[in-house]
Length: 329
Image (cartoon, rainbow, N blue to C red; front, side, top):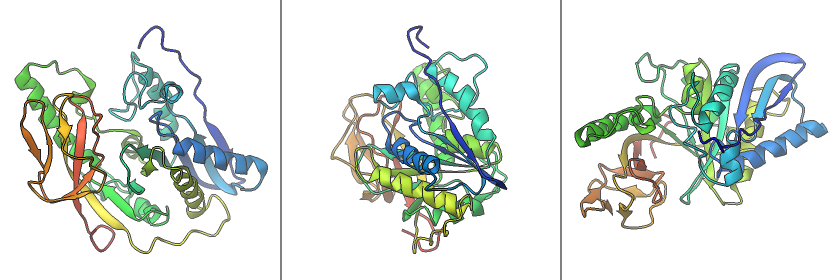
């Protein structure tokens, strides 16, 4: 961490009901330019403080701004991406290491997490859900039913899984490329647990967790999506006495299967791709800086296409239809 990087104070706001119940944590601005969650969280805090909304049982902790430096600068990260290779740092060097040392124990002290984000390209809101129950090595899990029940009441109609397994395969390819090019292996993007962010860390501590992508960064509806999801979560988990929200009639389910990195900063898309643009295997996606063409690795939908990605960072993902929530998308 630069000696000139300020250590901003970190804020959490905690409310506890008079009766026992689950312990929920709601986070915003893990990426500093994703402010919809911050807006939605502060709106709910104001309602609780005014008495308009009552936490009747259990507890809820709000973190309106997880990354104060990035938030102040209006950009994705301070020194690095907080939502990659998230874990306590015994010898913190970068700004986000200090945040991790505060945030990770806070997450572990709760039963469930709702993490609020937005995205660069245009598109409608969706939720990132964890894996099915499993005892595998990548992301063992036993609370899929809890997450799936909440997915149905957040207020969005699309759910995506497959994040960490896809990341593990992508990092393995990245490591092989780096080794062939003689690149040092100690960088963050080559970390074997690079795909671990807030939700993955929460699951590793025994909790359940969902990432809600509330819409495009500047979409005026994104804060409303965040606010409604918080209220729905509080009611669904019975932290409040509000009537639980009805389930969304149909959830379009997709599973991320592939991630393609930028190799050079001058790699370029052939068009302005948006999240969930449908593609077929072989569709021309972009050109490498050296002239090589990049095609879709299979049929499916593009997710998080990032024209501004740096070299050796994620350029786009490919998702495919899933039957996890019933009919496939």
